[in-house]
Image 1 (cartoon, one colour):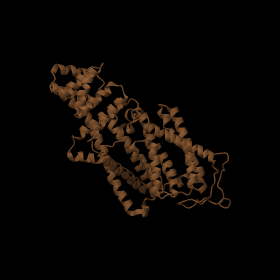
Image 2 (cartoon, one colour):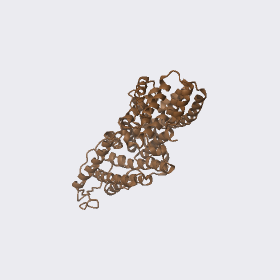
Image 3 (tube, helix red, strand yellow):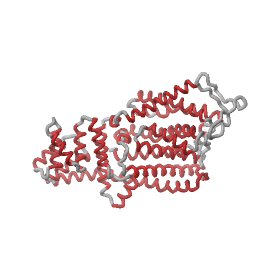
Image 4 (cartoon, one colour):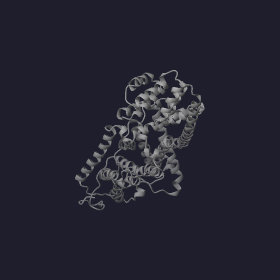
Length: 497
C-alpha cells in the first residue's frame, strides 16, 4: 500500500459513496487513497506482461517452445497413429462411440504431415526428414517420396541410406530377399522406433516376402496398440459418463431458471459489495506484483520442479491480500464468505450436483467445438498440449506437475479471474457481458491459438455462470480442476510410456 493511503474505512457521514453504474453503491464507504501514479505504473507493468505473452504466442516459432521437438513429435505422432490403427480394430458400435466422444481421426495423418513439414523447416535433424517421408509414404503421397529419393541419393550420409529404405518400402514392387535382410539390418541400427519403425520395416518385409519378420512386427504392434486401445476405451467411457450424468443435472438446472435455489451453496453477492473502480485498482496493482514475482520465480526455479510449483500460489498472494484488505474487509466480509468459499455440510450434495453440471457443460462445449472444427481442418497445435513432464517426467516431477495443473492453477485462477475480474465487470454489466469479458481476458492470458482460445473462453463463461448461480467459487474451482485433470489424463494415457 502507498504511503499516502489511509488504512481503514471512511464513515458514511464523512465521505459519501461514489456512484456506481449497474449496481448499488457499496454499503460501507471506503477510500484507500490509491496513488494514481502507482496505479498507472501497475497498469503499464501488467500490460507489458500481457504483451510479452502475446509476443511469445505469435512471434516465437511454436516448435521452439518444446525441448527436443524432434523426439517429442515422433513420440506423439507415433502414438496417435497407433491409436488410430487400434480404434479400427474395435467393433463398429465401439468405433462410433469413440468417434462420438473423442472425435474422428480422419485428418490425423494429414495434420501430422503438416506438423512435420513445419518442424523440418526449423530443424536440421535428418531423422525429422525420414519421419516425414514415412508419413507421406503411408498417406500415399508417392510423388513427394520419389522427389525425396532422387534428392537424397546425392546427399551426404545418412540420406543415401534413407533413399534406399524409402525406395524399397514405397516404390519398388519387389525387393530381393538378401537385399531386404541388409536393409532391415541397417534400419534396425537407426534411432527410429515405434510406429515409424514398424511401418517402414513392414513395407520392406512385404516386398521382400519375409513372412516371419512380418509376423514379428505385427505381434509387437499388437502388444503396443492394445495398451493404447485399453486406455482410449477407459477415457472415452469416463468422459461419456460425465457428459450423461452431468448433462441430466444441467438440464434440470437450466429448466428451473433463475429460481433454481437448490444449487445455491454459497453466500457471495453478485454484483459484489465493493466498488468496481476500487476492484480494478486492486487487480492492476496485485496483478503487476504477481507478474513480477512470476518472472522472478521462473528465473530462480529453472528446471527445479519443487521450486516452480510454489510460483503460482506465492505470486498470487499479493493480489489476494490486497483484495481482502481493500475490498472485502471494508464491507464487513470475510475472505471465505465474500467469495462464497464458506461451505456448510448440508450443501455438499448440492455442490456435487453443481460440479457435475459444470463439468458436463464444459465437455459438451468441447465436443461441439471439435465437431465444428473438424470440417474446417482446425486443430490445436501439438505444442499447446504436449507436456514433457507429464510424458517423461519422473514420479516426483509428475506429482509436482499434477499439483500445479490440478490444484494450484484452478484455485488461484478462479480467485483472480472469476472472484475478482468477473466481479469488477459485474459491477457495471449484466452477468453475460461480464462473463464474456472476463473469459476473453482469461483466454488471452493462456496464449493459445484459435481453437485453444475458444476452448478456454467457453470454460471461463461456464465457470462465471456457475459462480453467479451458486454464489460460490467452489463449483468453478472444482470444475476447473476436473477439466485440467482430464486434460492431463488424456496426455498421459496417450503419451506416457
